[in-house]
Image 1 (cartoon, helix red, strand yellow):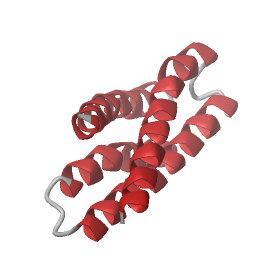
Image 2 (spheres, helix red, strand yellow):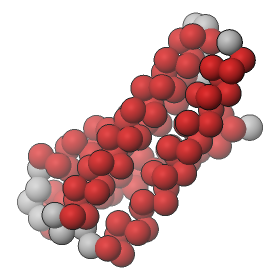
Image 3 (cartoon, helix red, strand yellow):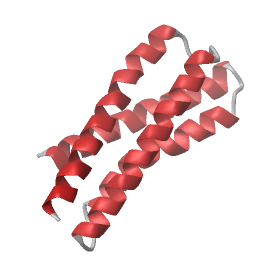
Image 4 (spheres, one colour):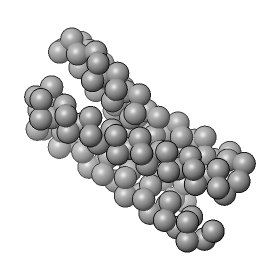
Length: 117
């Protein structure tokens, strides 16, 4: 069940990141940060989907660990965008809980897998 939750939440988050990237490019003519957050924010879900067909438990854990790293990087870019005023507090407060939840789910999942090995 947690795998489906991770898959669904990461997909929804990726859609928000795509829209955020489009907003940054259209309204702020910002291309560097928008591409960084687009890359890291959408790769979370891609890695989770890839993990579904992992060749082994070690491969599954490896892919989820990389997804965790990408989520952490995405949180960093969101902080940069907020602090540099590319996005306002309302926008940041709208998306920040989603990345926090993904981080918590990925941390919990990777810990459980490590304990079972």
